Length: 315
Length: 284
Image 1 (cartoon, rainbow over the protein chains, first blue to last red):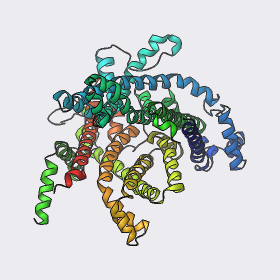
Image 2 (image 1 turned 180 degrees about the horizontal axis):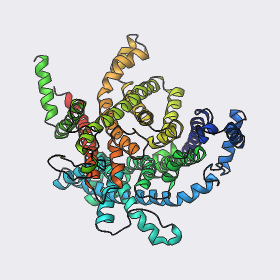
Image 3 (image 1 turned 45 degrees about the vertical axis):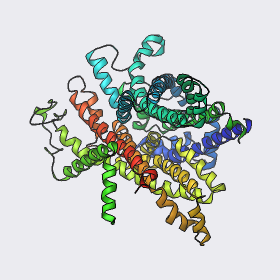
Image 4 (image 1 turned 60 degrees about the vertical axis):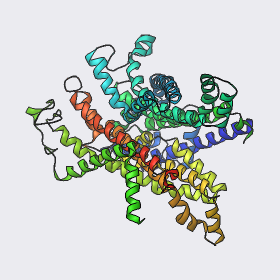
């Protein structure tokens, strides 16, 4: 267990380090002069020089990278050029919207997908299986931001049940905050649930064809017991893998969905930063999101060992 | 039996697969519509008609008009070219880089394999949207950036599929025979490994194509994809958003175009997977 876990942790750490080099290279080295890029074409030479000094651009590349990395490790992501506040403060403020949104969607899609997958797999080939999987096939094809627009039209514009957009802030109370996240999380969760339900069904069907399932049935266990106790547990590995991969899509989806509902999350922050050429903010947000994706994939790798005891002994 | 009869039988067998047939029809229609848009659209997409703006579907404008009075059907037709082009080139980039990498990793194994797989992990940490965000922050928005971002995302997908398939083929007896006859790893890969995994790669390419259509729509929706005046399905939806209470048809049709296209490609991919399954082919 330990050797498998420590190898995954080491790989996760190295991936993160490599990712930091990529982000630094793309956003600080490729553009040539970030100071000039941020100030735009009409900037005076003096302004450019001052900003260059402020950003430490006169120092050698490796020194700049190391001091940026050191900053990252101590939670210092630099100072936003447009907001004049530390980037980390901006990010913490916005994460309070994006993270709950991603987590609620993840929970929602899992809670829908696994029962639906079980339902379909247990009735393989029946009319209800075909119908369910047909719906899932369409669900996979729906872009979440379009689905979001339809939800807004039906539930906010026509029925006026929920707000069409905006976020009152958590200080306004838990319910008003959650209420404005209902439509966004449904919009994110349903297309993901369709993918996950298909994976769950096919993983279950693979497992149900195994010899040990026949043995379990032969020794007198009911179909239900076999399905829940033996099949589902063994089908969880591919389901977990997809869940991990989906989290990256969910985060990316969060960024897009925030624009549909005017939610002040990381997505809105990063798009505003792009228009205002606030590269330091873009860099910080991208780094935080990449780190999250790596961390989640690491957790998925580690959870394999919990689900599948065979992996614990393997390095 | 001569070759043409075998072909005819195989095509008939393929078309009896429902997913494949429906997927092929939808995808074929889409390709036709995109091709038609080069020579004919109901209206020119650059024509503004402010008096006739935000009109619901009618005999004159089958899918209605947008906030500038442009014909939505014409814009969807021209926009399909954009979706297809971006998704197609991204698949070519992903396959062109990813497949050789995966084959190389499988042929060499050991350290090179490990390094390439870790490189894959690294790319996987950057969802297409994040790459697009970085590229746009530096170079500004545009269709080319969308292609690069989606293409980079496709690389590890193809590398993984190619590596996995190649690893399962290398221990086969006919590969051993090829080795014994003195062929090198590169030649074996090209002559024996690649042709035997072509079906898997075709299916994956179809799937990535459909994901590319979705990703392109998402990127243009948030303004990171192709720019005006080139119509794109994603940006049409963005423009529809502020009009949703007065002109819901503006949001409905571009979305339906995306769903139909992606659904068609997914059905085609699913169908191809069944049709190309070696177990079925052995019967011929």
